Length: 188
Length: 431
Ligand code: SF4
Image: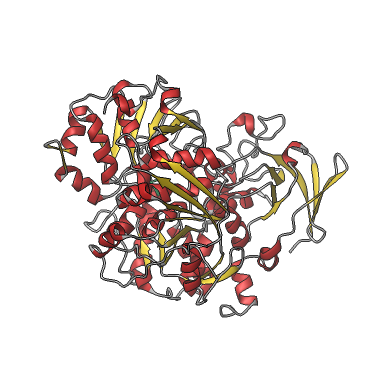
């Protein structure tokens, strides 16, 4: 597991549901065929209404026209991120787009589990409304061991809630890696 | 130690006497449900992790119900069905309900109930967030992602954090103009879309136990809209007779202890509640129908696992009998069984189907259809700035198709009354 995650912030509001993360019409692509997998990157966050994408300014594209990777690798959001459907395509799409960590005030349960068990992106929680303190494009640095996030642009450091129970699964890289490590399933 | 019904079921599944809220436990799974959207990627992960020749832990416990993208020309959607078919064959899954055959059922949560898979006291995981619907049968049901589902496929187990419970008690006798949908939208307005995150939502009270199973399922179905892990109603004689008519399997009845610990408790008197809607773009954006009456709509949609069951259509028929709709009105039965029942079930001497046809509604084939938008050729999909009144469960931006459309979630009574007038209308005007 990387212990330092550095990248640009993409800031979103509250209740970002899975239809906004990856609209349902795109769920038909394969999650294993490399040519189709990149389409998940292309359409990641494409359901967010334009004025609410890339706060505080809004109207900032997460994925440039014609691209499948985002220049932003850390999502900053309000409460209840990932609410809605159970589609694992949602954290998958964010990963394909290049997202490494999400920092939200809270998460919907299934999205949170999917992030952890699938090893897609680290879902951090904060007590502070970081989506009102950080701007899209700010350069951020997460220290995984210290549970902090530093805004290199504004030079302010914030605390992240420790991952708690799920740290071991995150550290192992997902539920399968964890289960093998703990001998809950045969080694491969 | 006193436990809630959810704790008791999870204790049993964890081979323990007692589990406490907040602890993570490994559970033995009774049924794993999947469908055409999440099945193929789940099977992929299963093969990647357990090997190309691996066998699922118990082929009798895997239920595969394609339902999401069925009646579409979309090639990728067809490929997904092919992948389900292939896996079901390879693994000899007897509970695969293939599209295009007379085994096809329709929307998974309703089909699970109809086919007798919902058994009190059991644990169900499904690759669909509305798996909580089955909690209406006094069992634990919750949604998971593909990775977790693949893990279950190989091991028959999964970890879960035991939830705290919130208790919602509804006292009194249900008035004729009120439905389970109004009750759950009432709750959502009170506790918001993350009010029950990682918690169980337990329902009881005289009004709840007077409801038929389909209406109870509407309540537990939308637990996820408040972020709930599961919704649950203890099984009573109504639940038992429903189950016994469909399954010979043994089951176990559980009830919360009187002194069980709850995160919080809410109490409602149903005689004081009125028909409500959730306004765009969130299921917790509640308003009484009276307060938004007159808002123009362009479509009415009666369907989905929430609002496409037989009881929903009986309610709609009560309003639509002898009337004409003034906007496009899509009737989408959840399952083939419901579609058949529309032809045989009579209201006031006429079949429901006849009533809907006479009223000018369009009756679609059973599937999820436009509940989640779906491919461009999906029946009832919203376009442009549509304003839809819908008996479905979600109205986030773009959920029913167009990002620019607005969706009002409502009961079948309200959706039917509004279809007639072309504006949001309180069903009491027609009852
Ligand atoms: S009807 Fe709608 S909510 Fe229900 S399973 Fe289908 S898509 Fe999901």
